[in-house]
Image 1 (cartoon, rainbow, N blue to C red):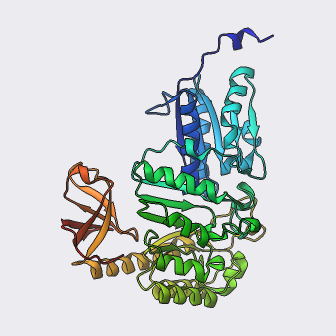
Image 2: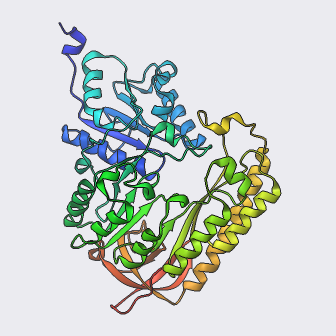
Image 3: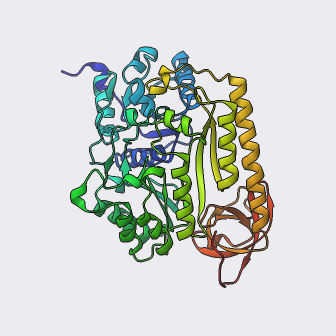
Length: 453
């Protein structure tokens, strides 16, 4: 018999999901929001007003983890009220049920491989008043991606592969998201076709390493470049992006797809992580700097207008000043258009934890500032070189000031310009005449032949 406390239970009506971390987490949040709305809940404008509050977490960076821990701690000091509180994402996988010991007011913990169980877990929490956790080590491809609740009506993320098999020594992803599991191509094509039919103009294919797509399912006879050719054939498909790419897995066939497919944007996020071969080996990146440069040279030969992005970690254990200088030299030679730059921080559960974190914090911060300054210099020079040219721009939304429109080129150059709100979701030609910080300022032009950046 159910106890009296459960008999007077009130069905929750609102939810709020706070997302931390990468594009995979953002997509998981959209899928969870869709599941909750299918259940009849509506999104709450604030955390404080929500009946169900979910923290979809990241463990890649220490800062993101500390933010969540601090938030949960404050809720344990009288802020919870009657809200059902859950933790999902990578931190849930890394810490599992130990979160309950630290935060006894927490109601559920769901790992990255269990978001399809969200509804059942909430029911179990509500009707038993027990703390529930589900953190399977392997992902089963059974998600209803079509239920995703997307707020953006112009651009969308589409999951094609989950997990990672590379085991970089600084990274927790193989331990929080498991081994690589590709999504069936027909499921991806169907979702993309529906999104295009709904008016989406730009789809970003996401995974920890999209270049590995299909390798775990050889019977499909569909690798990443094969999937791209299928997606390009969808009527009305305007733009396709993808991220992230591990350098070891990029193929000539993929480079040719970037060159040949009209919908595929000429941008590759191609993280090198460090410029020293010794550090790359210590990171278990499984390529050398020379091999990386060979692939960049071939890509630029086949796709002359391609632009590149990267991730770089400075201050990795035992990194010397001379090795850091090698990383700076890589930046000067490649000239990335986008760079995500970080100082190394230890993460529990990674192989790098067995090494002493021997680069002093002040040295890490000095190196980080120097590499940030170099990237700012490179980007500033490149922006000046683009002034006076005209490019294809996807109009994404109104600018924050409500007066201008904001959009992006095929290679993620951001621009604001005057125009009617009716242009949102269309491709337009914009002449770049000036820039403010990292954003171009442009003028809308009539149709004519475009440059591509």
